[in-house]
Amino acid sequence: MKAVIQRVTEASVTIDGIIVAEIEKGLLVLIGIEDADTKEDIDWLTAKIANLRIFGDENEVMNLSLKDTNGDMIVVSQFTLHAQTKKGNRPSYIKASKPDIAIPLYETFVKQMETELGKPVQTGQFGADMKVRLLNDGPVTIVIDTKNKE
View 1 (cartoon, rainbow, N blue to C red):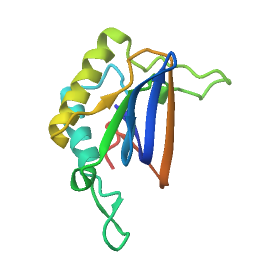
View 2: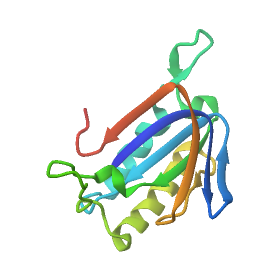
View 3: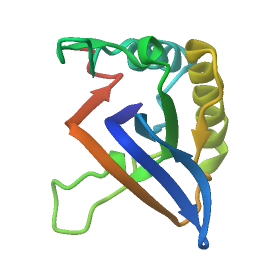
View 4: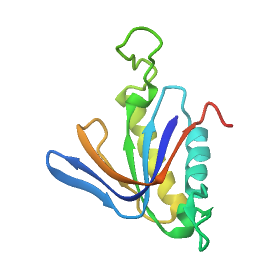
């Protein structure tokens, strides 16, 4: 499971001209799922994201988590995070899970994230053509791969 975590001052997801998710201060999380992902990956990743200390404290030192700041979150499924670009110029997405595997894992990830944060998490729509807007704060962007827990 791969995640791109972006600290934002605002973010939104629009589908067919309709805003389906919108937040102010918080995190926009792009999540890529592969067949090898398990509930263990979800548990580890949701705890890691909820507790990442990437928000400024009273001294503007990144010392607070999303939980500490009571910020909001949007989670967007993004299979292109598993792009393989070794050969040629057209990325291969063979490692990205098909919907029958990815959708249940994505839904479990969102529910677990809500449990970690103790509040609802907004989402895009799995498989939809989404327009994602964000104002990255910092910028702060962190990439995490559960298969490479460094």
